[in-house]
Length: 435
Image (cartoon, rainbow, N blue to C red; front, side, top):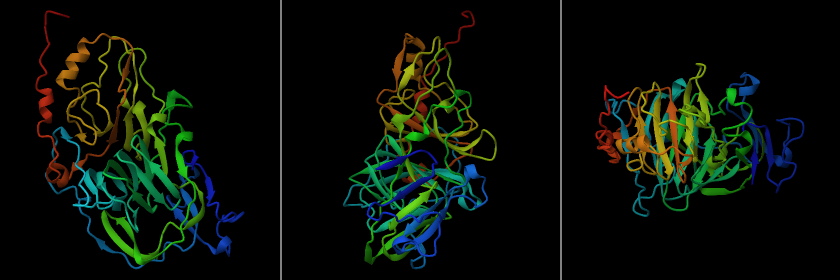
């Protein structure tokens, strides 16, 4: 069960405890059922109303009841952008391998691998791109991110995510956002892989539509929020609460499940969205509209029109433009472009770019269709055609200059050293005597 709407004021209580939400106030002297009231703030108290985010949770025990946090081994999670020298080349990764259980058991937290990023969480400005590779569920462990928001893009395998607000089942071709400070645990059902866009200092929001008008792109009603669900479960052996704080992991022990929220209300929640719901806008005359028309969510910077990061998709659609080279054009960009593929074959590079892999085209690094794509598209008969049928590629675009980690460049051993060769067959068609 879910409630719909993006950024709405939602109200939910577990049906096992009707009337658990206090009436008419947030913090009564005694809460119904003997619950504790706890506020979770996702913005400064004094933010303007449109950007003010908070929820009230009514729980069996407050989240403050835990032993002190102690450092936890981070594995391949990092925010150190100076591990290796900068690399301005076009970068492409083959599909990242999921370790086999039981030889190497990895849950969602231990399976986090940081690929690239910029900025730092203490200054509340920056992003990181992580790959998650896991084969086992989190058992009596939960995570919360003190640094920022996680936008999770599963590529292989579904995720059953238990949060303080309720449960979400997130499958490939869906995304979910777990916002700063929200505790969650991930159950998987076999070998599981996906991508994470982490942003600190800003929350994701729907992009402004401008001349598109009132409707289109990702419509607010298609975003789903979980309903309240609680467990009153004691864990004598210890429940581990993991905090990602200033780029490091810390663990604290408590003797009960943190998913003990009987009721809640507010506008600061986790949510999910199915990418098939996206209302595609496209050119119907000639030339390309900019790929910003495919923006699902944006995290804005303080500069008007410039995002810290955008989440953009390239969904199935019709291509009808006349006298137009239809695949993505050759491009040098003042933004960083990280791309992943959930399924299918990306139109500009049908061979080397594979589901579960990735590419990074850094600031002002040229990129575009490979030689085979260019030749085919230059000679194609221009008729209405379905583009990207059975495919879903996406892009994390950022105004920040992204540094690649040592794991991304070396340790993962999945960097495609031959990527540049896909453009080598491009040949000159210049003829000064033929206009």
